[in-house]
Image (cartoon, rainbow, N blue to C red; front, side, top):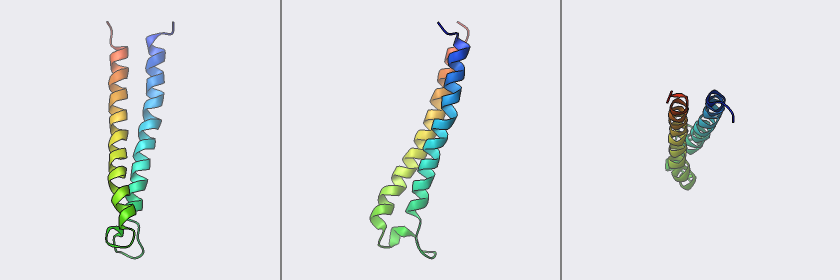
Length: 83
């Protein structure tokens, strides 16, 4: 069986890329929601449906990225805690 420190490293190596990927995906959707020609918001133009869907989904994905980061950090600390 592999030592606990190995699994702590595996958790740490998955923690950063997954949380960053979710956060950037969410940021991209939020930026897509506010993308419009000129200074007007897409929420007021013909792309209101796309913006209405992209904005909440983007904010949710940013939150998911933060939760993944926090929960994997807790899992790593619990794994490496001496028993």
